[in-house]
Image (cartoon, rainbow, N blue to C red; front, side):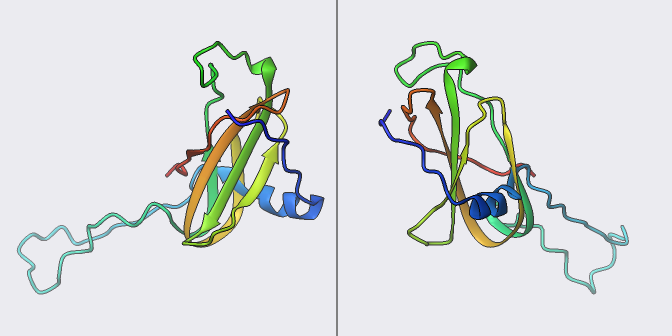
Length: 140
């Protein structure tokens, strides 16, 4: 764990990002077909899975609070200070960071994202000690 002080973005940015990152992907796909297996005049639908990191719409993220520190010691939720979510588009170098200072918050909603994005999350304790960032996949 690295000792870092939580980054606090400007309120307008935090509100905009907060309204955008709620950790449960709200995308769905519809399929169709006639069910006629003898019809070979139309090509079969594209059955390849879409890229799970490609978005055009709202994104919802969720996580489970850590129960132990990186060294294996037990971690009570009352010792947590919160979480830092960060995400970036494609090959961007800079992340957009969101600080959540409520250890009982376990989801985040992003109102709209377009393109390929990467999400990460870290927990920090009430003294500011950070965990490592880990990948976070939106729920589908």
